[in-house]
Length: 224
Image (cartoon, rainbow, N blue to C red; front, top):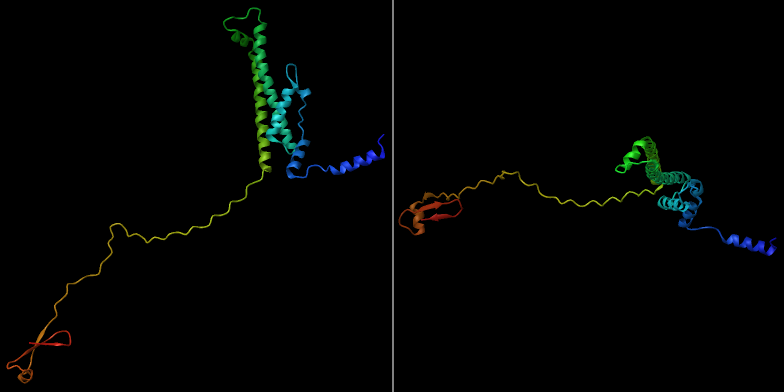
Protein backbone atom coordinates (compact mmCIF):
# COMPACT_ATOMS: atom_id res chain seq x y z
CA UNK A 1 0.00 0.00 0.00
CA UNK A 2 1.34 3.43 -0.97
CA UNK A 3 2.26 5.77 1.84
CA UNK A 4 1.05 9.34 2.14
CA UNK A 5 4.44 10.65 0.98
CA UNK A 6 4.34 8.48 -2.16
CA UNK A 7 0.82 9.60 -3.02
CA UNK A 8 1.82 13.24 -2.60
CA UNK A 9 4.93 12.74 -4.75
CA UNK A 10 2.89 11.11 -7.52
CA UNK A 11 0.42 13.99 -7.45
CA UNK A 12 3.21 16.55 -7.81
CA UNK A 13 4.80 14.62 -10.67
CA UNK A 14 1.47 14.43 -12.49
CA UNK A 15 1.11 18.21 -12.28
CA UNK A 16 4.50 18.68 -13.96
CA UNK A 17 3.52 16.50 -16.96
CA UNK A 18 1.04 18.56 -18.97
CA UNK A 19 1.65 16.94 -22.35
CA UNK A 20 3.00 18.58 -25.50
CA UNK A 21 2.73 22.36 -25.67
CA UNK A 22 3.97 23.22 -29.17
CA UNK A 23 1.77 22.89 -32.27
CA UNK A 24 4.06 20.20 -33.69
CA UNK A 25 3.98 18.19 -30.49
CA UNK A 26 0.21 18.38 -30.23
CA UNK A 27 -0.19 17.24 -33.85
CA UNK A 28 2.13 14.29 -33.22
CA UNK A 29 0.21 13.32 -30.11
CA UNK A 30 -3.08 13.44 -31.97
CA UNK A 31 -1.72 11.09 -34.63
CA UNK A 32 -0.48 8.68 -31.97
CA UNK A 33 -4.05 8.23 -30.79
CA UNK A 34 -5.14 7.12 -34.27
CA UNK A 35 -3.66 3.66 -34.28
CA UNK A 36 -4.24 1.33 -37.18
CA UNK A 37 -7.12 -1.11 -36.99
CA UNK A 38 -4.94 -3.76 -38.63
CA UNK A 39 -4.21 -6.58 -36.18
CA UNK A 40 -1.29 -8.60 -37.42
CA UNK A 41 -2.28 -11.78 -35.61
CA UNK A 42 -5.76 -11.89 -37.14
CA UNK A 43 -4.57 -11.03 -40.65
CA UNK A 44 -1.77 -13.59 -40.86
CA UNK A 45 -2.18 -17.07 -42.37
CA UNK A 46 0.25 -19.93 -42.70
CA UNK A 47 3.39 -18.93 -44.56
CA UNK A 48 3.10 -15.19 -43.69
CA UNK A 49 5.08 -13.22 -41.11
CA UNK A 50 3.47 -10.74 -38.67
CA UNK A 51 6.51 -8.46 -38.80
CA UNK A 52 6.05 -8.04 -42.58
CA UNK A 53 2.50 -6.78 -42.06
CA UNK A 54 3.63 -4.49 -39.23
CA UNK A 55 6.32 -3.01 -41.47
CA UNK A 56 3.77 -2.46 -44.25
CA UNK A 57 1.41 -0.75 -41.79
CA UNK A 58 4.18 1.58 -40.60
CA UNK A 59 5.02 2.51 -44.20
CA UNK A 60 1.44 3.58 -44.97
CA UNK A 61 1.03 5.52 -41.73
CA UNK A 62 4.31 7.35 -42.34
CA UNK A 63 3.19 8.11 -45.87
CA UNK A 64 -0.31 9.48 -45.15
CA UNK A 65 -0.15 10.33 -41.41
CA UNK A 66 -3.94 10.19 -40.87
CA UNK A 67 -5.26 12.95 -38.62
CA UNK A 68 -8.94 11.91 -38.47
CA UNK A 69 -10.79 8.60 -38.03
CA UNK A 70 -11.97 8.84 -41.65
CA UNK A 71 -8.42 9.09 -42.93
CA UNK A 72 -7.36 6.18 -40.73
CA UNK A 73 -10.23 4.10 -42.13
CA UNK A 74 -9.05 4.52 -45.72
CA UNK A 75 -5.41 3.95 -44.76
CA UNK A 76 -6.41 0.63 -43.23
CA UNK A 77 -8.17 -0.31 -46.47
CA UNK A 78 -5.00 0.48 -48.42
CA UNK A 79 -2.97 -1.73 -46.08
CA UNK A 80 -5.38 -4.67 -46.29
CA UNK A 81 -5.66 -4.43 -50.07
CA UNK A 82 -1.91 -4.22 -50.48
CA UNK A 83 -1.45 -7.23 -48.23
CA UNK A 84 -4.19 -9.12 -50.05
CA UNK A 85 -2.62 -8.47 -53.46
CA UNK A 86 0.66 -9.88 -52.21
CA UNK A 87 -1.16 -12.93 -50.91
CA UNK A 88 -2.97 -13.48 -54.21
CA UNK A 89 0.32 -13.23 -56.10
CA UNK A 90 1.68 -16.02 -53.89
CA UNK A 91 -1.48 -18.06 -54.47
CA UNK A 92 -1.04 -17.71 -58.21
CA UNK A 93 2.42 -19.25 -58.04
CA UNK A 94 1.26 -22.01 -55.72
CA UNK A 95 -1.63 -22.97 -58.03
CA UNK A 96 0.83 -23.57 -60.85
CA UNK A 97 3.01 -25.71 -58.64
CA UNK A 98 0.08 -27.63 -57.21
CA UNK A 99 -1.32 -28.54 -60.61
CA UNK A 100 2.05 -29.53 -62.05
CA UNK A 101 2.99 -31.70 -59.10
CA UNK A 102 -0.49 -33.24 -58.96
CA UNK A 103 -0.10 -34.99 -62.29
CA UNK A 104 1.09 -38.58 -62.29
CA UNK A 105 2.71 -38.06 -65.65
CA UNK A 106 3.06 -34.32 -66.32
CA UNK A 107 4.02 -33.24 -69.80
CA UNK A 108 7.78 -32.61 -69.76
CA UNK A 109 7.76 -30.24 -72.76
CA UNK A 110 4.81 -28.03 -71.73
CA UNK A 111 4.13 -28.45 -68.00
CA UNK A 112 2.58 -24.98 -67.62
CA UNK A 113 0.17 -25.54 -70.47
CA UNK A 114 -0.74 -28.91 -69.10
CA UNK A 115 -1.43 -27.42 -65.66
CA UNK A 116 -3.43 -24.48 -67.04
CA UNK A 117 -5.67 -26.77 -69.07
CA UNK A 118 -6.85 -28.29 -65.79
CA UNK A 119 -6.89 -25.06 -63.73
CA UNK A 120 -8.30 -22.43 -66.10
CA UNK A 121 -11.41 -21.89 -63.97
CA UNK A 122 -9.29 -21.60 -60.84
CA UNK A 123 -7.15 -18.89 -62.40
CA UNK A 124 -10.27 -17.12 -63.61
CA UNK A 125 -11.63 -16.92 -60.05
CA UNK A 126 -8.24 -15.75 -58.84
CA UNK A 127 -8.15 -12.95 -61.41
CA UNK A 128 -11.59 -11.75 -60.33
CA UNK A 129 -10.31 -11.46 -56.76
CA UNK A 130 -7.28 -9.54 -57.95
CA UNK A 131 -9.38 -7.12 -60.01
CA UNK A 132 -11.79 -6.48 -57.14
CA UNK A 133 -8.93 -5.82 -54.71
CA UNK A 134 -7.26 -3.39 -57.11
CA UNK A 135 -10.52 -1.46 -57.53
CA UNK A 136 -10.90 -1.25 -53.76
CA UNK A 137 -7.33 0.03 -53.40
CA UNK A 138 -7.77 2.74 -56.06
CA UNK A 139 -11.07 3.88 -54.54
CA UNK A 140 -9.57 4.19 -51.05
CA UNK A 141 -6.58 6.06 -52.46
CA UNK A 142 -8.83 8.63 -54.13
CA UNK A 143 -10.86 9.10 -50.96
CA UNK A 144 -7.91 9.76 -48.68
CA UNK A 145 -6.30 12.10 -51.20
CA UNK A 146 -9.50 14.15 -51.33
CA UNK A 147 -9.76 14.26 -47.54
CA UNK A 148 -6.19 15.39 -47.07
CA UNK A 149 -6.34 17.97 -49.86
CA UNK A 150 -9.46 19.47 -48.24
CA UNK A 151 -7.71 20.04 -44.89
CA UNK A 152 -4.45 21.27 -46.43
CA UNK A 153 -3.95 25.07 -46.03
CA UNK A 154 -4.77 26.91 -49.22
CA UNK A 155 -2.22 29.50 -50.44
CA UNK A 156 -3.37 33.12 -50.26
CA UNK A 157 -3.78 35.31 -53.32
CA UNK A 158 -0.59 36.77 -54.70
CA UNK A 159 -0.21 40.57 -54.37
CA UNK A 160 -1.03 42.46 -57.52
CA UNK A 161 1.99 43.78 -59.37
CA UNK A 162 2.40 47.57 -59.58
CA UNK A 163 1.43 48.92 -63.00
CA UNK A 164 4.37 49.82 -65.18
CA UNK A 165 4.38 53.20 -66.99
CA UNK A 166 3.64 52.82 -70.65
CA UNK A 167 5.98 54.50 -73.09
CA UNK A 168 4.02 56.62 -75.55
CA UNK A 169 5.24 56.68 -79.12
CA UNK A 170 4.10 59.10 -81.82
CA UNK A 171 1.92 57.43 -84.40
CA UNK A 172 3.92 56.43 -87.41
CA UNK A 173 2.61 57.71 -90.75
CA UNK A 174 0.92 55.26 -93.01
CA UNK A 175 3.05 53.56 -95.60
CA UNK A 176 3.11 55.56 -98.86
CA UNK A 177 1.77 58.77 -97.27
CA UNK A 178 3.82 61.96 -97.73
CA UNK A 179 2.78 64.96 -95.64
CA UNK A 180 2.03 68.07 -97.74
CA UNK A 181 4.75 70.77 -97.94
CA UNK A 182 3.98 74.49 -98.22
CA UNK A 183 4.27 75.84 -101.81
CA UNK A 184 7.49 77.72 -102.54
CA UNK A 185 7.64 80.44 -105.22
CA UNK A 186 10.84 81.96 -106.79
CA UNK A 187 11.63 85.54 -105.71
CA UNK A 188 10.16 88.18 -108.05
CA UNK A 189 12.20 91.28 -109.12
CA UNK A 190 11.06 94.58 -107.73
CA UNK A 191 9.07 96.71 -110.20
CA UNK A 192 10.67 100.05 -111.03
CA UNK A 193 8.47 102.76 -112.57
CA UNK A 194 10.18 105.72 -114.28
CA UNK A 195 8.94 109.19 -113.27
CA UNK A 196 9.70 112.37 -115.25
CA UNK A 197 10.96 115.30 -113.22
CA UNK A 198 10.48 118.87 -114.47
CA UNK A 199 13.56 120.83 -115.60
CA UNK A 200 13.22 123.25 -112.78
CA UNK A 201 13.63 120.40 -110.38
CA UNK A 202 16.45 119.01 -112.46
CA UNK A 203 18.22 122.37 -112.40
CA UNK A 204 17.93 122.29 -108.70
CA UNK A 205 19.63 118.95 -108.69
CA UNK A 206 22.44 120.34 -110.84
CA UNK A 207 21.55 118.68 -114.18
CA UNK A 208 20.96 120.36 -117.60
CA UNK A 209 18.60 117.72 -118.97
CA UNK A 210 15.59 115.88 -117.76
CA UNK A 211 16.28 113.39 -115.10
CA UNK A 212 14.35 110.20 -114.61
CA UNK A 213 13.48 109.17 -111.12
CA UNK A 214 12.62 105.56 -110.45
CA UNK A 215 10.45 104.63 -107.53
CA UNK A 216 10.68 101.23 -106.04
CA UNK A 217 8.51 99.54 -103.56
CA UNK A 218 10.55 101.15 -100.79
CA UNK A 219 9.99 104.74 -99.83
CA UNK A 220 13.40 105.82 -101.23
CA UNK A 221 13.63 106.96 -104.83
CA UNK A 222 16.38 106.22 -107.29
CA UNK A 223 17.46 109.26 -109.31
CA UNK A 224 19.25 108.69 -112.63
